[in-house]
Image (cartoon, rainbow, N blue to C red; front, side):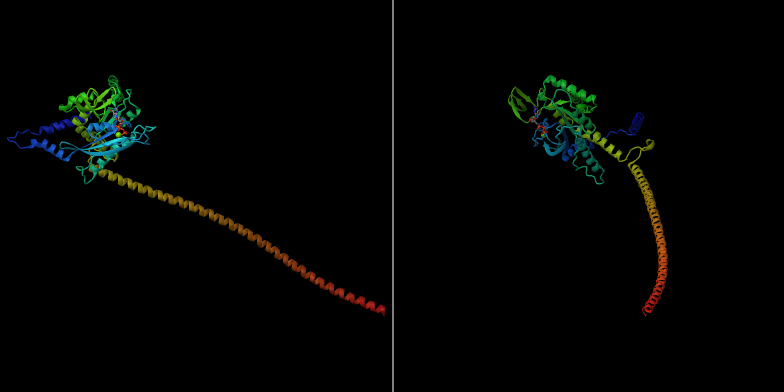
Length: 435
Ligand code: GTP
Ligand code: MG
């Protein structure tokens, strides 16, 4: 890594050395480039997307209304949602000649389920879905990123309950799962319910808990000298303890946004009462562009890298050699082709194997059938032979019987003749006696 960095450094230095600085003898006009950029941006308009994560009724809508000094017409959510849903609404706002397309995404039903283990998942999915939509637009042949409505979340305002104790497991789990995807600015909601000394302790406790759990929250940038000092100071005051209200109360001779209680008035824009102004300054006036930039260069870049790597694209091939998209594409195509051929071959072999198996089964069935047939044939033969034998015996019996019958007939006729002559002799004898 170190070597790589040194190499790059040297390379750029060498390149820079090849560039010569010249002085011009007159005005050319490219000093107006920043103005051109400003004009173009104003014409194009800006877009900013805020995600509010916090329990139902924690004061999300009131704070957003107070931040942008308007009523966004949000309705109360029910405490009985079976799961967390995200609701996005886009508005067009205008301040002097600057147009802002503002999208506010609310978590509906967050923290209301008995099992809160998966509460962060819909939020993660939503953020990823916006990145995916942008990536798909980028990957199109005919891109229209200029007119594309960028819905990627630029900041996540995480509303912490003003318990004065510590973060809840749900808070830690959610922030931990979101910190690599979005700029998180944690805020202590309804800060008017915590006393001043308790609030300081609470802030320190929260920050130490975030650090010990490795949750990366958004840090206001300190690389730009013009805002470095204020940003550094504000980083030390996180998380901001905020109070929201659209109600106006007369304080002195001025109407101010405040919450009125029987014992006094909490002024939203009074820095002695809460950090609302700090949040507004940091979020809208000073760092809105940085939040947009960080979203594109850090979070989206990470999503894009992971996604492309998942799809098999890399910048370096084996032996750390740089590979172009074209080469990766060719390699992938080759790999895919090979894989397809391998699969085809595998399927062919499987088919042949199946046919062989089926053939063997059929042959076995044929053999069994043949054996059965042989067996039946044998039985049939045996039966036939038995019957033949029976017939032969019967025929013999018939012959014997016929013989017997013939003999008995002869015998019978002889005995009849003999009986006839005897009768005649008896008669003659009787007649002679009579005479
Ligand atoms: P859902 O969208 O229904 O989840 O609620 P929400 O988080 O948008 O809360 P909402 O802004 O509707 O406020 C809920 C209640 O809390 C309202 O009665 C507000 O007046 C009150 N509330 C809002 N902000 C504050 C605050 O800073 N301090 C106190 N004490 N109450 C607040
Ligand atoms: Mg709301």
